[in-house]
Length: 104
Image (cartoon, rainbow, N blue to C red; front, side):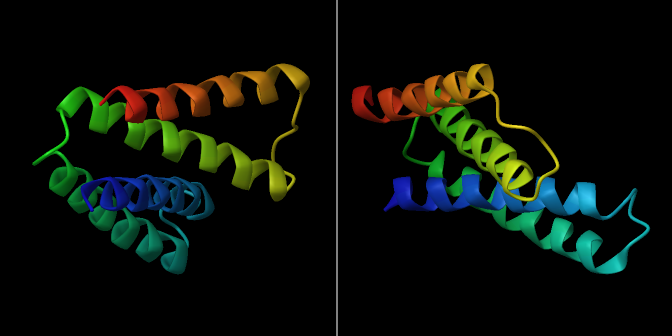
């Protein structure tokens, strides 16, 4: 169950990061509100998962999920380009996150 919470917290990291960019320096209230809620949920989930998952593993998985999803959202929205190098590096990041889960 804690792994599910950790994965959800990583998804919420992508939500708050994307909302932060969309808030344009907190000048747009709806994305700013989404940022605050997403950040709170993400931190709560990370803290909850760290009760049973080692800190280093939990943090790496949380960051990895958030980073990959944030880039994927940016690519889908057309804000960033997907290059071969970027795709390989993202795949390596996903592989690392899966590897941490396997060895934990």
